[in-house]
Image 1 (cartoon, helix red, strand yellow):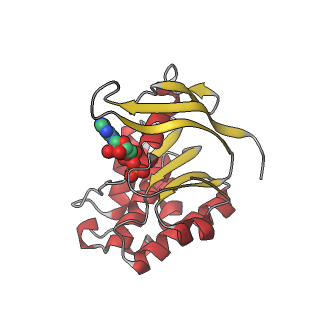
Image 2 (cartoon, helix red, strand yellow; image 1 turned 135 degrees about the horizontal axis):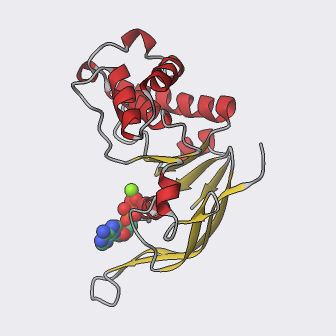
Length: 215
Ligand SMILES: Nc1ncnc2c1ncn2[C@@H]1O[C@H](COP(=O)(O)OP(=O)(O)O)[C@@H](O)[C@H]1O
Ligand SMILES: [Mg+2]
């Protein structure tokens, strides 16, 4: 594993409704470094600020105080360039139910302007990795929760992101589905040296998957 820093936060603070009666300090002075190829777990109970941190790193929220950079670019000043190189799998992400597994990947990649022949090649490979090659022409609405998660992970990867953020990738998925997703993340990290930042409230998940943890 290389040791270069791909994400750095310094004194990152997010206060919602600042100065009001119901002010919430969602992030309080968070400083951390995440290195290339690492599976980094953000562990904490509901309301700890995990989603807030991820949303700042992909430019969906701005920090109240402090700084954050992704791939050496500032999350406030350079967010458009950052967005081209990272993928986010949101907590409440949904698949395109009426498309097939393959179409889910290719359609999404097309939104990033990637040519269709490139997308088809990447889709072959990703559908193999997630173990859905035989099911690639089935509409996703017939899939189990775990299979849909696999489609979502493959869909996020089709843009070949340097960093992938996953917000609670196994929450709401049954035990078998959660295992499938965990094994997939392990494989991505060991075979592709993919940098993965995931949030979870499950300590055992972090122990099993992550190289390092922030709490
Ligand atoms: N847009 C918002 N406006 C006001 N408060 C918010 C907003 N988003 C999150 N919060 C509050 O910030 C805290 C952290 O939330 P969140 O980052 O979603 O936590 P987690 O993902 O760890 O469960 C919570 O108290 C939540 O209610
Ligand atoms: Mg959350």
